[in-house]
Image (cartoon, rainbow, N blue to C red):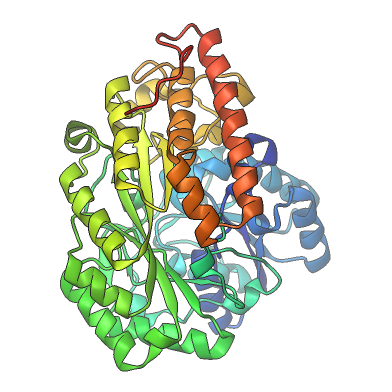
Length: 497
């Protein structure tokens, strides 16, 4: 039986000005599923609609020509609009093809997806075991009853079978990266010079789950328990992928890697012992309170080139009371100082507009970003993603918001509507202005422009396009704030100093 796995794209008109800088990342989850299915004899393809920047038309043409028995969609809330349209067209034109959805949105809303006829089956949480059993049943023309982790209609009723077993990560075959041949992926949207390579960068997964519980994160919806692969197993995979595909750059997709000082040192030791630190570069994301200078120095020796820190806010009260972050501004200062001293590139991730966050607290975040001076920053507007603690707290008043609003870069001017949490934080257009202002204040500083120009860290075409987008978006959001009579408006521009 043929199985088509789809990484959906957002409808392009929803992306706004910054959509052109969205990163296309190889869909690791789908490639794991593909490997598991192929090991069992299935004929599998992966269609990365997001990387192809395609509408649903080419997808329907592929279904027409290849005729898969199952089409599986990796479904986040943000791309639901695409999945709904594709599923409707598949059901209408290919009634024998089964539509299956999985990932966070599917895990949280299985009944809605089945009731609205979007999905024939919903795979909840981790899908390697459940989806394989479902495909086996369909291939063998058996009723898929009793499959753990599956939601479906049985005898006219929607049934949720018990949660699937936790996957032992070391039992999984390596992801089927060969199925992504022909797609183009950049390690970062800005094409950072130290991460450029003749070969495609590929993701690596060292763990699933997160021991922390930040209020804005929904990862626990899919990963109920933290599991960490042995460092030897991770390095084995990196070495195999390097030999097989020539890959020179790896990016960890874990919520946090490494999860401890001990694991980090063991990982670095293994890379150095095998001599891979001279062949490979890699990047990761972690917390500012989980590193020290010795670990960062050891990881750099082992090939760490770029690190993303979830700094989130410049206000300790916001971090503790609104985000449950359990990290402090001072810890961020130390971590960024160490990485700068060691010459490791940094990406500072920030969130603005948490419920009840004030304008002054957002301005503190802007000031901290400029003080810490990471090589790249991003300011997301807080979004209550389904499955997060924020969603649980506010779902009763969010109502039937369109799926495309679930983005940290939602553009209220583009769609002429309010932010999801409008009323519990600042008015929508003032919040949009502050977000765009934060980006402009950080990147328009002469020291930052000069650093980019002299280092070649970012290509000139990306730099020029980015500056144009920042300026136009800032002006647009400033006029939007004026129209909504938000006070104070930036009539006389005053940086957050």
